[in-house]
Structure formats: C-alpha cells, structure tokens
Image (cartoon, rainbow, N blue to C red; front, side):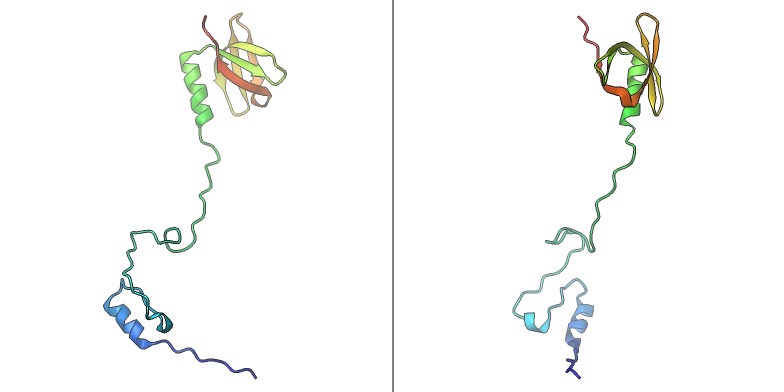
Length: 127
C-alpha cells in the first residue's frame, strides 16, 4: 500500500475569513505574501468574473435586411439590382419576403427576383 498524506486545514484561516469576509485567505506556505481585500465589483487579473465566460451566440437574424428593404420601399428609392450573371434591373422594390423581392421597373414591368440570384443592390445614380 502507498502512503497517503493527510491534509488538515489550518483553522485560523477560517476564523480570520469569518471575521473579515472580503480578505483573501493565505495558505501556510504563502505567509510572506500580502493579503489584499477582494472587491467583487472589480474584475480580477484573470479576465473578469468568477467562472468561465462563454461568447454569446449572435442572434440568427438581425433584421438589418428587413430594415433596408422597408426603408427603400417607403421612399420608392430608385435602385439597380445586379444579378449574378451581370444583368441589371432598374426600378424600385414593391415588396419582399424571405426568399425574393419584387422590383417594379420604369416600363411598368414587374420582376420577381430570388435573393440568392442577386449579386448586389445599389442606389441608381441621378445625373
């Protein structure tokens, strides 16, 4: 059988902790170090609060796209929709949904365009 070392805590540490709850407990071998009071409102040197912090997962939908489409629809902003094949459609957005937009052109034609086929949308230059 192997020898086992019995660990017995120093009871004076626990008495001192009850008297001064914000004071850091010092182990027997570390008595040469200074004890500093703990402030729970200040972040520690190791990166903050107690326990590991996990990165928050960003929301699945930020509604930025919806805000952009709504703003362009209400102002009937003249836009150029450039498709993946390079074709340009000039007009304004009448409505949109999750998968497509409806563009009304100057010659009174309506185009239903799938969002995955759009390369980019830009405002039409005036002039």
